Image (tube, rainbow, N blue to C red):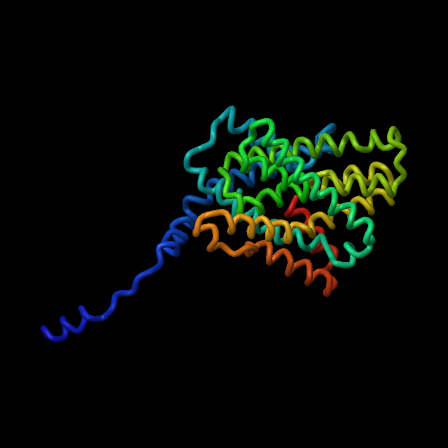
Length: 303
């Protein structure tokens, strides 16, 4: 018997990596569900509010931000809901970035022409650099400035979430960045169509301007089609071209961070899994005809 016991003691015990144990703890669904339900309720309120007269012009995102702010300031954020809110802010938003690929095909990018792509790329780069520089001049935290720059120059909240994998900013900074680009994007959506005749822009020029500068896809569509069908179509394609630049921008930021950061950051892949999945969905959407109903559902899910 003693020999058996000795043999058993010699068998190496199975151990699990610390990150796997931590991942299992982080996916404690009993702690996540209350927060996810709260987020879903606020989202439902935001979508319902659009049916109220006077609110139809506002995107569900800004209505959800306002509803969440009211709830938090009046009732407070329940402690038991914080884990689910964090889960929604990180994991669910990353999944939404993947679904964003159903709105874009390579043919749409090609259709805008080399000149249009050049305008969009130049605007994106200039906006990113200008926002970072302005943030430094007025004393905004560098990580927050980078998040706002990404959201402003690329595609709003989706770009902020993707960039934060590299930036690793506080959750509060992510919230501030999303709220600011949503607010100013809404102002642009309402103001750009008013400015079009004052600036003497035809439908093609206005479409490029709106698509190259307004933050969210829904906001671009709202502003573009207010100025005509041609304007709306061009604005949508220009905006989706910016969305296509999400992947190379995140990869570039990731490579820059790896050069100047700690070994922990350097160990991360330059392209996060959800950005790679986004690229794969764009490729699939370009090669296979996806039913319009599916695209509509995916667009609704990413709103």
